[in-house]
Amino acid sequence: MTGRAAFTLRTLALLAALSAAPALAAVGDPAERLRDPALEARAEAIGRELRCLVCQNQSIEDSDADLARDLRRIVREQIATGRSDTEVIRFVHDRYGDFVLLRPRFTAATALLWATPAVALAGGLLLILAMRRRIATTRMPAELTEAERRRLRQIEGDEAPGEEAPPATSLRGGPGGSGTPA
Amino acid sequence: MTPWPMLLPEGVDRGSAAPVEAPPRSPWRRRALLLVPLGLAAGAGAGFYAMLRGMQTGDYDPKGLPSALLGKPPPDFALPPLEGSDRPALTAAELRSPARPVLVNFFASWCLPCVVEHPMLTRLARAGVPIMGVAYKDRPEDAAAFLRQHGNPFARIGLDLPGRVAIDWGVYGVPETYLIDRRGIIRWRWAGPLTEDMVSRELEPLLRRHAA
Image (cartoon, rainbow over all chains, first blue to last red; front, side, top):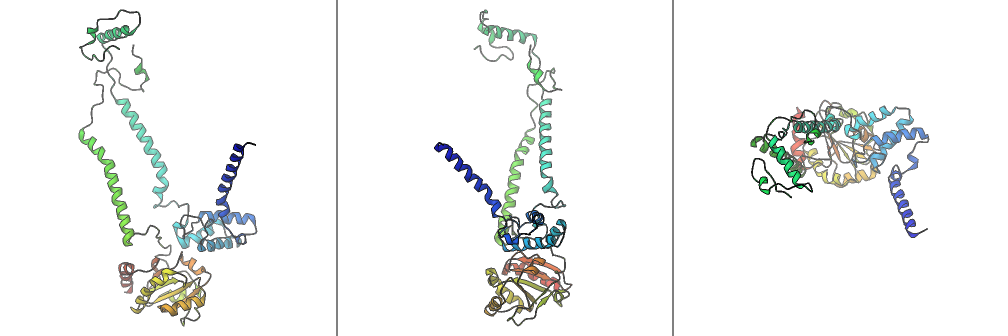
């Protein structure tokens, strides 16, 4: 193998290791976990929905804070005693309020938050419509008059090879006369 | 012939002999449109300035959370007494209908801000405010030594070694202080050390209001 291929392999291995790191960082202590993998999976799914209030930007599954560990334990205890996911989340929500839910509920206070993508999309569509309308209503220049057409043909004929050039003076003056022959 | 108008969208007015450009908007409208982004930026600036000022004076805490228990009675609980503190234990029964508004303070000997706020608790206790203490996740001997060293402003103390009662209260760090009115309803919660400013601005008016 060339040195270059080895380098690529090393880079890939490093990237793989780095991308796996966050997963390894979650819940450190295996003793915390429930024996039943199905129940543990439910507990982890619930934990990922709950905010750690100490660090405020991690779920309790990802946080090493003391309070997060306590809450993880409470979630697992309640799962083990047969409570439903909603009951467990309600238990924590009753104590810590809306902020503990990483996925905010749809209430009067969060309506704007949830509606923002739709509002932005609707605003963009309206803007596009308004702009199209403006283009459509912009008046177009009037058709050329017969005299102007004649002059245009003259100019075009002037540029066409092998044709007689009209006198240069005819290009100057007159209404709308613009430009000079190339 | 002129092929290019064919590219235009439907409804385009091709024939009329009108000026090439759309009629110019009134200069006032144009100027007003220019002012819109300026106005938005000025409004945002004023908002951010107010936020920064509030953070400096303590009026606004971006990490502050309202307690989920405001307007509700405290959770039911019964904590053992703190050995070596000479104070009776603390249960929910003592908070059900107190003779006057009561403070409940979660503290720990290992918590530095608790040391900072301790003189304030002592001052409030001297002024006659009943304060109940909850020693949070603390070894009893450490908590008792802490109170011997800094003074004991608490009328009753419960020991919450596992921290479960604190979770029922929605505590997310020590110190935290709750105000309970005479009907046994939680009226106020402050997460963090009680400062001079906070007490005179928020707590004292509340104590006066709920004393009646």
